Image (cartoon, rainbow, N blue to C red; front, top):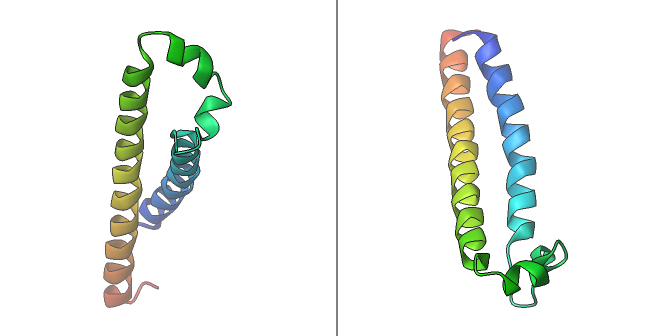
Length: 87
C-alpha cells in the first residue's frame, strides 16, 4: 500500500481524536457536565433537549467508529508494510 494511505489515516486519526474528546466532554454527566456551561439551562427549557442529547450520542458513536476504523486500518497497513519489507 502507498505511504499516502498511512498519512491520510494518521491525519484522520488526529482529527477524530480531538473531535471525540470534545464530544465526550459535551455529554451531560451526573453533575451537569460541560454541556450545561454552553446553554444547557436554556435548552432544557425548550422541548428539544432530549433530541440534542440523542444527536450528541449519535455523533459521538459515529466519530468513535471512524476513530476505531483508522486504528484498525493503520494496524493492517503496518502489518502489510512490515511483511513486504517497505518499513
